[in-house]
Amino acid sequence: MTKTYAVGDTFTLVRECDPYRPTYYAAASGDFNPIHIDPQVGKEAGLGGVILQGLCTLGWAVDAFIRYLGDPGRVSGVRVRFSRPVAPLDVVTFTGKVITIENGKLTAEIEATNQRGEDVLKGALVEGRL
View 1: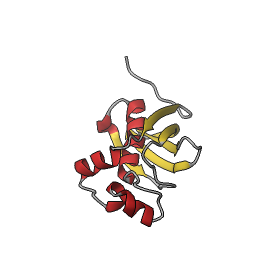
View 2: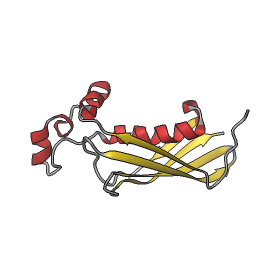
View 3: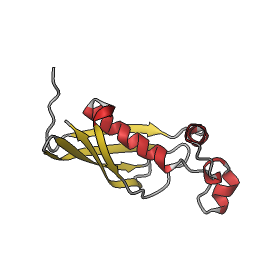
View 4: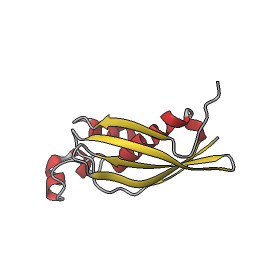
C-alpha cells in the first residue's frame, strides 16, 4: 500500500535526553567540546552544566520527519536554527507539519519544545523526495 501525503499533515516525536546522551553523542560524532562533557565548563559558560550537541537535536528532528516520510534515503535537505540548548533530562517534543508538496518534493516545518514549553528549535525545514 502506498502512503499518501497532504499539505497540513502533522507528525510528532518525543525524545528524552538521558544523562549520558551528550557523552554517547560525543563518542559517536567526535564532538568532545567540553560544554558537552564537563559540567564545570558548562556552568562556567553560563549553560548550567553540560548541554546536548545541537547536531543530536537536529538528528532527532530529522528522525521525526523520517518516521513520517517512511524512508531516510528520501530526505533531501535540512535547514535549522537552534533556539535553546537541550540539557540532560530534558524531554523534547518535535512537532512537524507539511507545508508544501510540489514537483515531487515535500517540505515540512518542524518545531521543538522542552518540557517547560521553551522553544528548542523553531522553523526548521526538512525536505524529502516523494
